[in-house]
Length: 110
View 1 (cartoon, rainbow, N blue to C red):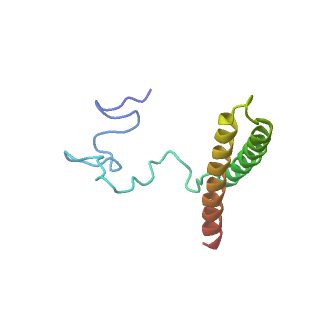
View 2 (cartoon, one colour):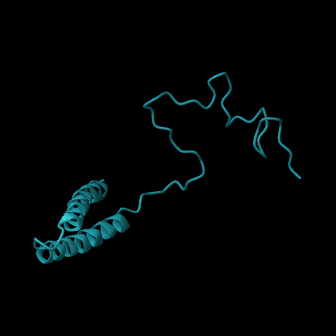
View 3 (spheres, rainbow, N blue to C red):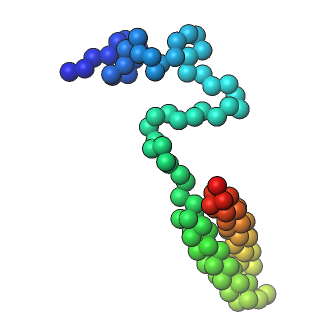
Protein backbone atom coordinates (compact mmCIF):
# COMPACT_ATOMS: atom_id res chain seq x y z
CA UNK A 1 0.00 0.00 0.00
CA UNK A 2 1.29 3.45 -0.95
CA UNK A 3 1.14 6.10 1.72
CA UNK A 4 1.58 9.79 1.10
CA UNK A 5 3.23 12.45 3.16
CA UNK A 6 0.77 14.52 5.19
CA UNK A 7 -0.93 17.11 2.98
CA UNK A 8 0.04 15.43 -0.29
CA UNK A 9 -2.04 13.19 -2.60
CA UNK A 10 -1.27 9.49 -2.76
CA UNK A 11 1.93 8.86 -4.67
CA UNK A 12 3.45 12.29 -4.04
CA UNK A 13 5.88 13.31 -1.37
CA UNK A 14 7.23 16.56 -0.04
CA UNK A 15 10.30 16.11 -2.22
CA UNK A 16 8.27 15.61 -5.42
CA UNK A 17 9.66 17.99 -8.10
CA UNK A 18 6.28 18.26 -9.84
CA UNK A 19 4.83 20.13 -6.89
CA UNK A 20 5.79 23.81 -6.56
CA UNK A 21 7.10 25.05 -3.25
CA UNK A 22 6.53 28.28 -1.39
CA UNK A 23 3.57 30.24 0.01
CA UNK A 24 2.07 30.90 -3.48
CA UNK A 25 2.40 27.30 -4.64
CA UNK A 26 -0.30 26.36 -7.07
CA UNK A 27 -1.73 29.85 -7.42
CA UNK A 28 -2.26 31.28 -10.87
CA UNK A 29 -2.42 35.06 -11.26
CA UNK A 30 -5.84 36.36 -12.36
CA UNK A 31 -6.24 36.42 -16.12
CA UNK A 32 -3.47 33.89 -16.73
CA UNK A 33 -4.24 30.55 -18.38
CA UNK A 34 -4.08 27.60 -16.06
CA UNK A 35 -2.35 25.28 -18.52
CA UNK A 36 -2.56 21.53 -18.38
CA UNK A 37 -3.56 19.87 -15.16
CA UNK A 38 -2.21 16.50 -16.25
CA UNK A 39 -5.61 14.82 -16.17
CA UNK A 40 -6.65 15.48 -19.77
CA UNK A 41 -5.13 13.98 -22.90
CA UNK A 42 -2.56 16.08 -24.73
CA UNK A 43 -4.74 16.17 -27.85
CA UNK A 44 -7.97 17.12 -26.07
CA UNK A 45 -10.28 19.27 -28.16
CA UNK A 46 -13.80 20.50 -27.73
CA UNK A 47 -16.40 18.60 -29.73
CA UNK A 48 -17.17 21.49 -32.11
CA UNK A 49 -18.71 19.27 -34.78
CA UNK A 50 -21.26 17.90 -32.31
CA UNK A 51 -21.99 21.42 -31.09
CA UNK A 52 -22.50 22.52 -34.71
CA UNK A 53 -24.94 19.66 -35.36
CA UNK A 54 -26.90 20.41 -32.19
CA UNK A 55 -27.06 24.11 -33.04
CA UNK A 56 -28.31 23.30 -36.55
CA UNK A 57 -30.92 20.97 -35.08
CA UNK A 58 -32.07 23.68 -32.67
CA UNK A 59 -32.14 26.24 -35.48
CA UNK A 60 -34.34 24.07 -37.69
CA UNK A 61 -36.68 22.81 -34.96
CA UNK A 62 -37.16 26.16 -33.22
CA UNK A 63 -37.43 28.04 -36.51
CA UNK A 64 -40.06 25.71 -37.96
CA UNK A 65 -42.08 25.40 -34.75
CA UNK A 66 -41.89 29.15 -34.12
CA UNK A 67 -43.07 29.94 -37.63
CA UNK A 68 -45.91 27.41 -37.36
CA UNK A 69 -46.96 28.79 -33.97
CA UNK A 70 -46.93 32.39 -35.19
CA UNK A 71 -48.97 31.60 -38.31
CA UNK A 72 -51.49 29.52 -36.33
CA UNK A 73 -51.83 31.97 -33.39
CA UNK A 74 -53.95 34.64 -34.99
CA UNK A 75 -55.68 37.01 -32.59
CA UNK A 76 -58.20 37.22 -30.99
CA UNK A 77 -57.93 33.60 -29.78
CA UNK A 78 -54.22 32.79 -29.91
CA UNK A 79 -51.17 33.93 -28.06
CA UNK A 80 -47.91 34.74 -29.86
CA UNK A 81 -45.61 34.47 -26.81
CA UNK A 82 -44.41 30.87 -27.26
CA UNK A 83 -43.88 31.46 -30.99
CA UNK A 84 -41.75 34.51 -30.30
CA UNK A 85 -39.70 32.57 -27.74
CA UNK A 86 -39.09 29.81 -30.29
CA UNK A 87 -38.01 32.35 -32.92
CA UNK A 88 -35.67 33.96 -30.38
CA UNK A 89 -34.13 30.55 -29.64
CA UNK A 90 -33.68 30.01 -33.38
CA UNK A 91 -31.81 33.32 -33.61
CA UNK A 92 -29.55 32.26 -30.71
CA UNK A 93 -28.92 28.93 -32.45
CA UNK A 94 -28.04 30.81 -35.65
CA UNK A 95 -25.49 32.89 -33.76
CA UNK A 96 -24.05 29.70 -32.25
CA UNK A 97 -23.76 28.15 -35.72
CA UNK A 98 -21.80 31.22 -36.89
CA UNK A 99 -19.43 31.09 -33.90
CA UNK A 100 -18.80 27.34 -34.20
CA UNK A 101 -18.27 27.55 -37.97
CA UNK A 102 -15.69 30.30 -37.47
CA UNK A 103 -13.86 28.25 -34.84
CA UNK A 104 -13.85 25.18 -37.09
CA UNK A 105 -12.42 27.23 -39.98
CA UNK A 106 -9.75 28.68 -37.68
CA UNK A 107 -8.81 25.20 -36.43
CA UNK A 108 -8.55 23.76 -39.94
CA UNK A 109 -6.33 26.61 -41.12
CA UNK A 110 -3.85 25.83 -38.44
